[in-house]
Length: 392
Image 1 (tube, rainbow, N blue to C red):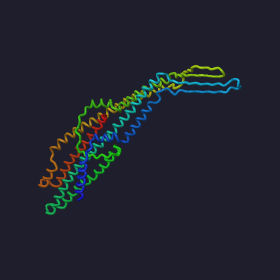
Image 2: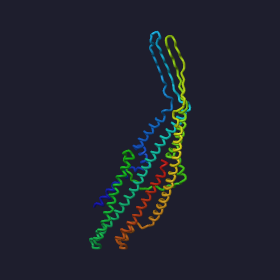
Image 3: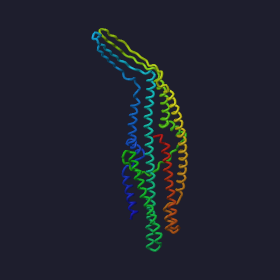
Image 4: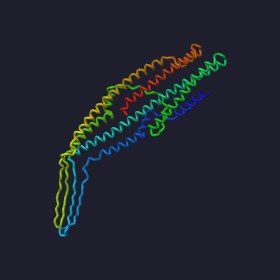
């Protein structure tokens, strides 16, 4: 029969998968961190930005000039000019540029680490969803097994005249409904597997774990402090520091620029040797550059404050929701441990204490509560992963 084939197929799949070492969450995160295409691209981008950050902090290239001029009339002789000069910004400009370069290097690393956190969070959520679906599959298989037993029992009763075709059809419809739910769940498995392949760089990971991790305590004040030191907040604070250094850089660019070098001139038997020096007079160039840089600094400061305010509010909302779900999960686990299970319901039906309709109603109600527990656990763990992403 179709339902029996489904059970056999799923059972064989589960047994086969158990023969292979079951990958843990840590092993999945390791594969993602080392094979994810987004992280590989982000790492290459970080390296290119590091190289870019190290440019522009040294003086410009020296200049060499050579001139040869023929005299006319010839008696004037030929003139030869030769010069080697070097241009310099004001000395303090190189110090400020070097500090700005270090900030750019730090930002490139922070951005990469923040990207790693987001990708690992996605992988963690995919793993949680897979554990949830594995639990749902086990629950549906158990329900299908019970439904088949009921169906087979009513078929035998029909042969002896103890029941009617209506009740047999009712039992058969329940079997078909559960088969359809299992088939629908398989599509979810396919989507989840595709997400895993995308995250791991096409490395296949078959997750058969059905054990939800134990709930870990969350201290909101400690969590908030860790987020304050987290990569994303550091990026905003680093941007403020960067804009502050850019004000210094722009100010130093307005200071006089220096030029010095060696110069020689030869004509007939006369040779002139000496040094050449120059200085720019900062009158008109970049007149509003410093004010523009200060305005950008003010925006960066307000943007950092805005981000942290939003982050605190979002964290508090997630934390409150996590606390609510945790309490709901604990209450439901206590309730279900004290509830009648499927075996007792089936025995009551077979003894004639309850009708088939009552049995299906009570059974559905019991399993729906288990399903609700799985849902609450999944949502709690997804929030837990979101709250703890700062530790990746």
